[in-house]
Image (cartoon, rainbow, N blue to C red):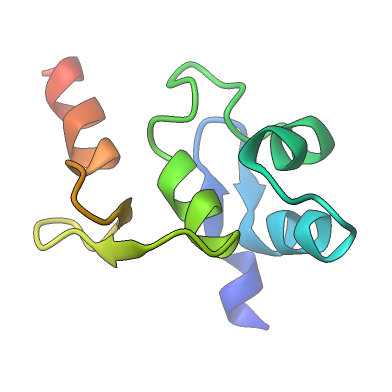
Length: 87
């Protein structure tokens, strides 16, 4: 249950459990999860939460070696990329 309390969308303070409920309720795409929960609608536009949510939807995801955040396999880490933009 502690896993469900982890953040999914940092910008909008949406927890992983909320995303999982949306998926269990029938959301099958990032856009559907976003509509039901609000993930991806914050200032980063889903760059930080997108890969986590897509991984929960079954897309291939690995963890970033630098920060541990989920990222789509073969893509740069969106969390690290977003942090670099703010620097």
